[in-house]
Image (cartoon, rainbow, N blue to C red):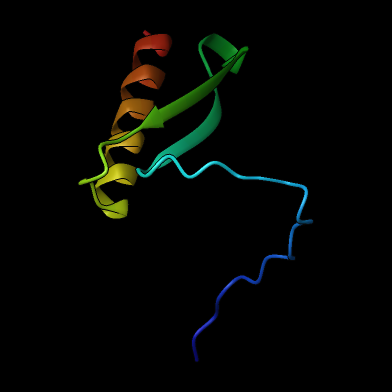
Length: 70
C-alpha cells in the first residue's frame, strides 16, 4: 500500500515561487546544553537529486552540530 501526503489546495491569491532547484531547511538545538537554535537553509543546483540534496543538508547540519558542541 502506498501512502502519500495530501496537501490542501491553496487559495488562488497565494503564489509559491518555483526556484527551479531543491531548497531545503532544517532546525535543531546545538551547543552546550543545547542552548542555541540552529536554522539551516540550503539551495542546491537544479541538477542535484532530492536524495543528494537531503544527504548534503544532513551532513552540513551534523558538522555544525559537532562544531558547536566542541
